[in-house]
Image (tube, one colour):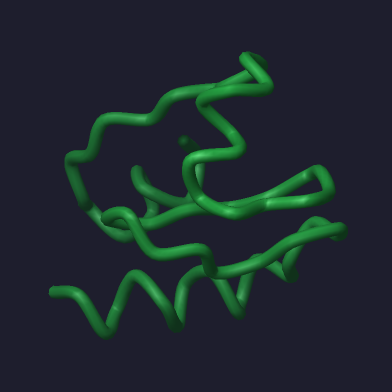
Amino acid sequence: MELLSEMNLLADMEHVTDVKEIGKYGVMGTPALVINGKVMSVGKVPAKEKIKEWLSELV
C-alpha cells in the first residue's frame, strides 16, 4: 500500500490464503505477487523498485 501511495495509484489489494484460489494461478510457492491476473513473482518478496517498475508499465 505504501508504494501505491508513493506512486499516487489507486488499486485493490487482496491477501489470498485459500490454496484453491492460489492454485488458479499455477503458483506452487509463496509468497507470490499477481498484478492484473499475471503472476509477477513466486517464492520471494520482490524489491520495492522492481514492483514499482512493474506498476509503472501499467500506467
